[in-house]
Image (cartoon, rainbow, N blue to C red):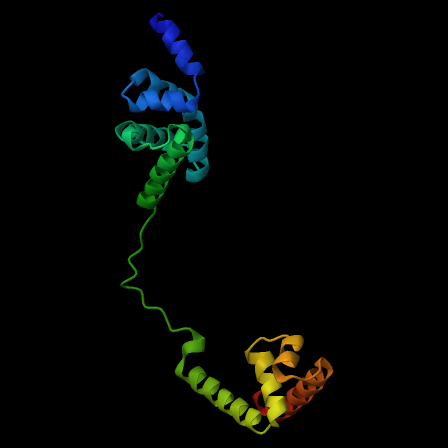
Length: 188
């Protein structure tokens, strides 16, 4: 078989065969991998980068890395996904390196309004008022309201938990909500 015939048969071989030979150090086999997968790797990198400026460099670096690590390829049949992971990591590394970094040590941001001392005190007072309103409810109403509003139970689950019909749950919740609304009117 001549060298030309060998190259032709290699370019027609499946990924597993070509990658296996490249892993054994066959530069012609690796060249086939480059020709076979470079267009896909370029297109993928272009989409990741958003421009074409660094695409060829990134793809070339990925192939250099792949050549150096061919012995790490455990499944030659998965060479395509292996190469795509390498080029993806290279592209992400390049994106990270080119993004402008802002020094946040010198920036002083105000605390969010919900964390301000006045808001914290107001929230605590509102919770205390709700606790007091709940304490004044009859036991069945309080348990029903707590299971529904704090526990997120469905009406059926509350009925099962309290061993009452669903219609009773609806009535207890309606009365509890009405009573709480009246008691919490000052917090509206």
